[in-house]
Length: 171
Image 1 (cartoon, rainbow, N blue to C red):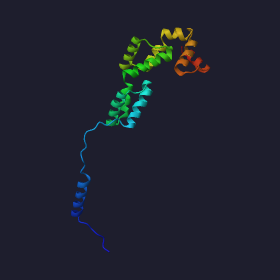
Image 2 (cartoon, helix red, strand yellow):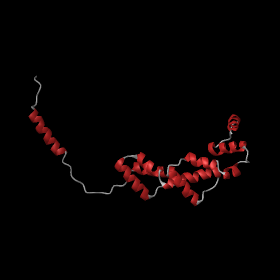
Image 3 (cartoon, rainbow, N blue to C red):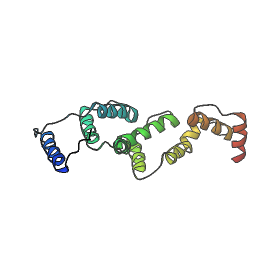
Image 4 (tube, rainbow, N blue to C red):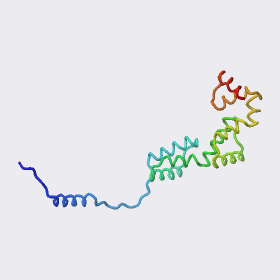
């Protein structure tokens, strides 16, 4: 039996007919589409992690819509992490961790602005650890008590004997 061959003209005509039927799509009306479940979950979890609170419906809509359009979770996370609210949380957390207290509104604004201008968390923590208040409230004025307080406040543990000896040599 001889294999069947088709002329390229017949294949082209059949292909054209097929495409015209398949590709004729009906235009739909414009609609408002809510943020996808994935985007909503990302926004909700990000807010709890970054801001220690739930996202508002407006935040879920705005950030979720941007995510649905771009798919760029990194950009959304950077935008949230670079927000004034997040910088303020970082400052509040630093004061609670190092000085065991809240922060005055004027100091909160100044330290948040410091971070916004490119200041680092390392510099913020260093300024608190080297402050007179830290020395007066957390140590008895000796180098030993300073090192012990430094380990408790920054690492959440007691200093080991070898670490204390090494640190005291450097002071």
